[in-house]
Length: 399
Image (cartoon, rainbow, N blue to C red; front, top):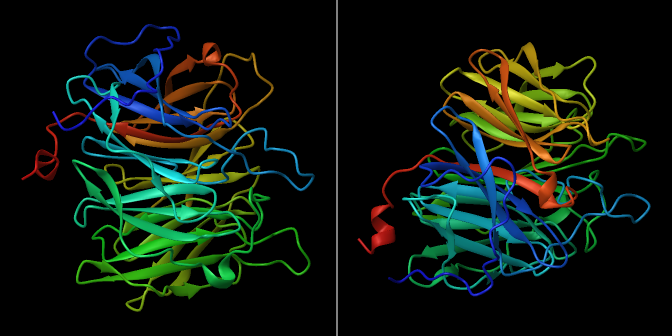
């Protein structure tokens, strides 16, 4: 078989409850650590509940963003959304301290089992924080958020792993950072292909606390003839200061979270410039940073990093429609809803405390809180993605 287990695969670490045997679906997050990062895989039962956790080395080192005093962030160590991405039976993630991107094969018979494909690829810049994948283009792109900032793209080769395509695409005036970066204000946020892979989008944060306030940037690289162009279309929206996470509502509409006020719905013009359609201020929010969209319910979600709360929004109008609270085990002083992923009717949330919360979105209720204290420090936990089973893509079998 052309995919091999990487030599640095760690011994499985269990967290109550025990892992499901032969789980058919799983969720994943990155434990971003300076002494060696890993992907934490957790099996999902048929009822949506989570089992125990298994670690797999990313064969690289992590690193952390620092705050204004130069101290590593206590949580949200990359200041980003999308540090782990899954498509079909392939997972991609970043090593911020090694400046590499990693490609894994997911075992479809047990998706908690991961194998590195090839070797980690240089990210061509400093401090990679967010990845995206287009199955139409078979292309992975990574956002570097350090001193040498920019976007690098790779062909996902089933035999050899990630193969660079072109050079680093700089962000221009959209980012001026150090390595490690300081933030979240002024830092890079997320990278994502649009639904039909005709463009590649990036968000960077401004600074809502500066005088005058500084808006962030939204950059879009056209994809022409299957090739990502070198020069982006760059937009600043006057009252978007801290663009953090975003999710596509459609080919021409984006839901963007902004912890300085709440969330916005943006319209994408034919030239890839964006304009604000709806600006929704959320009273009582502390830090809405991560964004999700559920097409089945046609609802958007904003995760509040300052409290155990998910805000719900109408995808059509952008209006706030409610909120879903969740509880943890109360053993940690850290609260908040960080990165998340939606699988079927369930949202899986990386909590500020050391664990995961599971919500039933259709009923607006919590299903489970999985305590992961046994995994050690919560500080580096980043990203969330899921795998729902299914056969490997044809291209991964060499077809």
